[in-house]
Length: 250
Length: 250
DNA sequence: CCAAAAGTGTTATCGATACACCCATGT
DNA sequence: ACATGGGTGTATCGATAACACTTTTGG
Image (cartoon, rainbow over all chains, first blue to last red; front, side, top):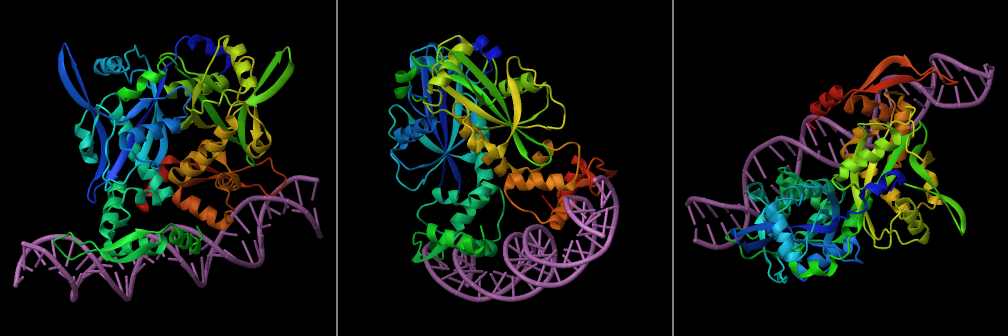
């Protein structure tokens, strides 16, 4: 917005969108939610995957737009949601396939799009109804992302989201509980933790730390549907966590 | 970019800008670089301050735009620069004063602006020529931000940048050296560190840690221009830092 | 009884913290 | 001589890391 430079550009406005990288955890693998996009046209029919997203509405804040996308897709409210980075490469929507799809779905000529990336964490366990019309949403193993070609620069966006979740973990580790069911086993929590941080935690040390520092509540229940010794269930308790944190001065 | 929702909005495109929160350090205080904006009009004359920024050019990446803004303002290249968050409140440019200024400087009707915030760290010590035409750029103590009313939502952007620098510190502490002159005293480094993290480090422990972990090089020079015992100078050495990090397995 | 995963404590090491006195310099 | 900040080492505490065997359950 310096005076001298603004004039060059004002004839041209990019569109602004939000794209949501939605993670889930099934007890074993870290998952990402992608929607199928299918295009039929003269040159044939193809189908690939993309991140859920939307161009922002006229009077909508960025956060509001992301919340809307999530709600339209999952029907859920109060989802853990965090803006992590924006992407504005002028060529990010220049792939013919992407241009084509944009024209069909928006019924307009869409030029450049600057998109704001959001990270969302949801409990995969709740039976989510993916409500959005003519979109098929499915969970994919995060590990398989490397072998998929997503629309636009969505591969990069997803990679950055993974980096972000890893960084954020060190600042607000409680975000992991957004991915777990209300009652979970210690092994599930450890699996998740190690998946995100790419570590291998020691079973005993992990247990100790979680109980002390994160104030997990040990329940009198066990998980019953496993073909081996039934593991104990735990619950995350915000109050206890705060208390534990205070004791150690954090 | 879900099909069902895009149509509502496509008549309306926001502008996209970058705004740079540029920090410096004078050896004692953490500073922020602001530019003066003056408007004279029928209703009188007023002057206030804003972050340096620019609407992005047609074929310009976000990072490129931020680099351009910095270069136009300071003449410097290779500045530490980091995107930290985007701001898209539809009302962020609705203040009459801001609207007025936008119209005058862009000679156009500018509607909504979504801006991408960048954090930049520069060595205040270099005599920087602030080159940008008709802008007066000056360093302000970060502490005085609370008492200033900046243009647009620039107060919020600056606050978020400060939060960000604090967080990033824990991940990549080397960024502090971007703010210091090549040769600096331990006290300067400690002052800076404590300013950013809002801590009060113990002198001895701090010294120990810096030498061990961050691989500072002790020089055979001292700072000469002080009216008390001349303090030793140190230099940050990337190679040494890497070695030190490896020894402790990070 | 076998396979598979759950559960459980102690010791050693490392990093973080707390703490006080003498030194060099300019005025 | 004095005022101002510079420079230095040790002891304690707490957190993290390493490590192996027994228990439960279903098949």
